[in-house]
Length: 446
Image 1: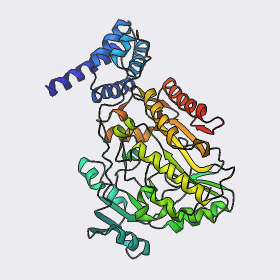
Image 2: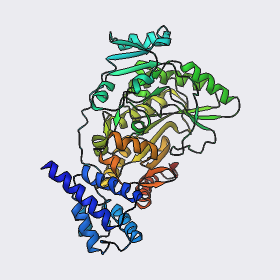
Image 3: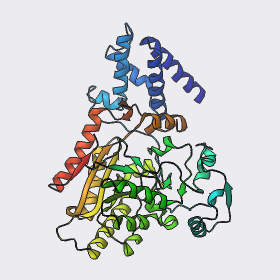
Image 4: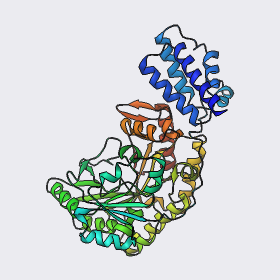
């Protein structure tokens, strides 16, 4: 039966290509759209039927074929029944994905197998981390890239969840902020990677397209990154994101890097850092050396999105509690009169699914009930977007994933939702924040 279904889909793809007089470039796009239909479990015949009812098929020439292909991409934003019900108005969004996995909330097992570069085996930081991991499974390697080169096969993904690499980061240590990232109005915006890859397994994460393997690599020469930061600070104030390529909070028991970054920032008055996280731990707040230039930026998603696409991460309720406890700890330790607290709420990336409006509204209500929003520093809002090169890699490595195969628009080298969808989602989230917190600083990605 499966063979017949595959053959049928392939045959329909061939028929559709002929009917629209597809060029080579159009053929590539058709394969992508049909892959998305396949992984979402839909019936491509339903969409062909709608195109024929609209008079879009068959096409007289390639120009009309391109219009039909564009229309198919538009229709794929919705379920066929919703399109028919709404007379093709496209007012009801589709479920972007057919995989649903409950978040068990179980704590990850940190590194049963430790890989250490030969050049750093006697380093004190390496000895300290190895002692914390308490493992006898240690392999010495020449270079961390030898391990990452194993790729994202099913077996290697399982191994990655039980492995950690300790290495020395060489070459460039600081990078100018990427266009897809928020600069929050800062002119000198940089990021650095003291850890590559993450303990969490978010389906949409760009790291899956950036690196050939998901094994976390901890760079033990943090002092070198500090020195390069100081070099920048000699010329201008710096806004630095230190937790883009991992979740430092989730690794704190192993690295201690959050505390070290806090201490470093506090002693450099022209430095502001952001620590982005989904981690729900609250124990760090007890002895935190607070600095209002260390911003803890929490990514918040509806529980349904967490369960489907943010595998291994804490539940929404747990993240909210971590923020609330952190804010209470900050207010107890610091004179907060007239100040906002160094906490940022990030609704980014927003993921487009059926009933997204209800999901994000319910999420916001949960946040409002538990957090003193008047003291939140600011808010980040943005719909999912990703570099074209990263998504192309992800489509090869995770061909069965609906979120990856979604028919995004390509704008200036980045895949993103169609403008209408992105604007509707981001405006909705911005409105929820602004109506509840008049005068709130809401930053949207442009």
